[in-house]
Image: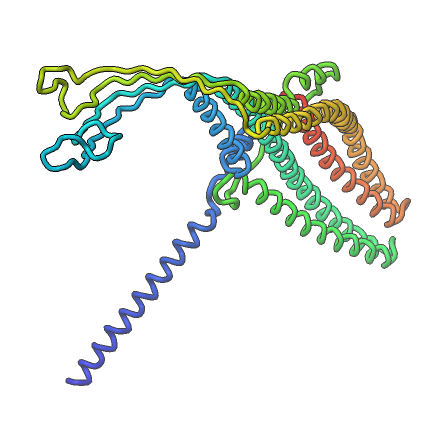
Amino acid sequence: MLHGVTMRHNFRHCSQRRAAAALAVLLLAAFAGAQSPPDSAKPVAITLDEAIKRAEANEPAFAASLADSKTAGLDRSIAAAGLLPSAVYHNQALYTQTDRGQTVPRFIANNAAREYASQAVVNETLGLAGIAGVRRADAAAARAAAELEIARRGLVGAVTGLYYGSIAAQNKLAVAERAHREAADFTGLTGKREQAREAAHADVVKAQLAEQQRERDLSDAKVAAEKAHLELGVLLFPDPRTLYELSAAEGAAELPSHEQAEQAAAKGNPELKSALAAMGVSNADVLAARAAYLPDLGLNVTYGIDAPQFATNGPDHLRNLGYSASVTVDIPVWDWLATGHKVKQSEIRRDAARVTLTAAQRRLIAQLDETYSEAAAAREQLASLDASVATAAESLRLTKLRYAEGESTVLEVVDAQNAFVSAENAREDGRVRYETARADLAAVTGTM
């Protein structure tokens, strides 16, 4: 009997342990499923525009620039609101000690032992400093908008490079796979020719070495394609391992003329806009510093009660409600030259901003010519690269035919294979170069 109870007790504990272990396995499996995308998931189709849109939502530096631009816009509305009158509803109850049997308060500044104030107070200050503050906020908002555009175009350029770089990596992987198959087929061909006593064993060894090199190249191409896929995935998805596939337009987009690029850059270059806005901020700072030389006009209107009773009418049926108005003009006389020094400081900063503006103009001219020349050269080379691929493919075909007839050596075949692979990889690099250069030109001209 005791033996049966012990057996049931042990069985119950074993069942509990097995249940806990099964639960742990299920939790680990669920966590692993949440961490890695399922193999059967359909890849998400991503165009370049979709990639840019997703990157704008996920990139932290662009989000910071966007936040700065929005806060600068709010600063502008805050500065404009500072020019408008302010209104408060003021309420106060005041008790002051008196002597026995007396109603006169001990503090001569107070009017009665009990005093109640309930008043609407409107204040307005008119001065040049407020106008300068609005101008500065406008210029700062324009500068923040220009900096946001700079950040956006930098992000677009980076996404464009990663996008076409990932496509090129995939295409290079396909090239490596094709080259590896071709090297394996050539190794088989040399082996057959050796068995037929038409080629030396050295040809087989050379073909095997070439095949081994192609196998290493294929491994490197797989790693490069995966890295490019993950780098772009960081900007596009919460999980960079999400399956997606890229689709690029067939053919290369055309370039605008140099004159069109110059006109667009003069109107829409974000760096030039930022420098102009910085100059506006400096001018507003100079105006604000000089405003300290001039007086401010203060206006005050008060309406309500200020009486010993918290009521609209007093005990003698006198109206407690009333109003008062005041005008204040404070004329600055002497501040130990502090205002003059502040004006000097603002003028020094304005001179530095002017130098920055002229440097931005010179830099724009140089960048426009550099980026346009780069894009034009890359565009012209695309046709040459396509021709090189076609020529290398034909050369490889003819060389293999000559080797099969015993009219060429194995070294010539391997050289033709290498030339074909190099031409295909160069074409992919040329496509990335052109698209990146075109994105840089669009960033400079402001047409992105």
